[in-house]
Length: 454
Ligand code: TYD
Ligand code: MG
Image (cartoon, rainbow, N blue to C red; front, side):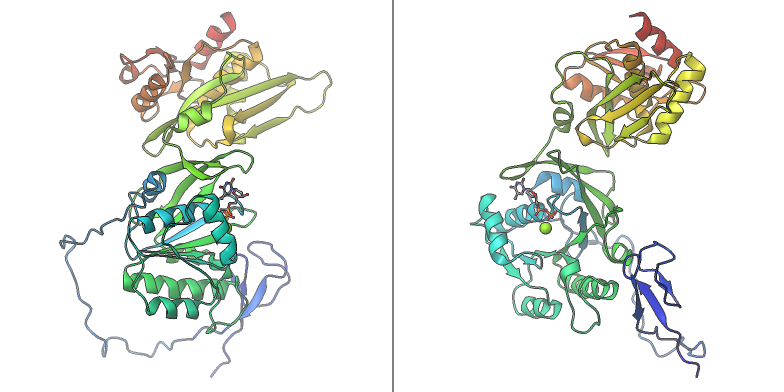
């Protein structure tokens, strides 16, 4: 029999190679290839068409197929999950170090425990005393959460086997877990995969909801193998700028719900506070009308969120190459808008530096922001403030037309609710409403004329 081929697995990205190399060919990390146990090779001669047990088929509409979700009581967390915890499911919670994953999960755990359900919180990163200190700071010391500092999966599963199944099991974090049946140090691909597999199996068999905390590498992926993302039912990402207080909880994958819902929190001295009106957070501090500032009603899932877009134009004296710097938006899209403003509206940005910032550290990916960005740019260039209490929405085409966007009505109603009295956007009868004055802008050139001549 031929000798099984050696396999080397990159510990950073999980890719497999048959030769050891100093640098991974896929992710370009150095010294991450480690020899893996040879994969069992099945002979094609095996006949698998007999000798197995019959698999049971069921109807799609079997009653009771819908799982009953358990609300955590943290409304923003439940919203991002699509309505609460699904029994027997596994959730992977990713996020930068220090962003607040442990804080969020301890708060959710305490809420569920106070409702009278069993909750187990296993910390592999912090000693029990440290977690207790955090609980005291959050005012949660009295919550009946079963807390343990442990890293051995066998110890954890043995202990769980000897007690009532908890409703919620938090493992903080999967990279610190270790199984004695698998070779390698904690955090390696095989350990992470093996430990996750055992814990997920426990959740599926008992109906407990499992939350695995996962570290994020510097390029934003959850450290360890991508396979972890395939193994779990829900992948959540906890995001935010550490220098800003707000945090967004987002589902990147959800087998039981929509992936475009978000939960918004603010990190305060005594833990994460739920923010049920995010617009107020992202718009805070807007008092004076300012040149270069435009408000855009963004959509996050089914929820509108008003954000402020700021532009700054600095004329250059010398012939140096002007900078374009963008925070919170797409650089390519800014280049496109500048090109459209130059070629269709006769404006010149070629000898000016352009800075664009979405206030509050918020990230926009919605193409409906084009008109608001253009309005901010034109306003900055003309050094004239846009009309007060106005909101801007619309996609801009390469021909300079302003195109309709989805959910115009919902976006404008949110703006009206927050005291905005005028909306600018594509000529679209559906957007006109009693709540605010709607001004149709068909061409970007109309907007430029309006701002320049005001
Ligand atoms: P933590 O939950 O430990 O982050 P993670 O588990 O994602 O690494 O949160 C750490 C940060 O949160 C820390 O820098 C301090 C801050 N923090 C507050 O501002 N207020 C609080 O009440 C708590 C508990 C933490
Ligand atoms: Mg932590």
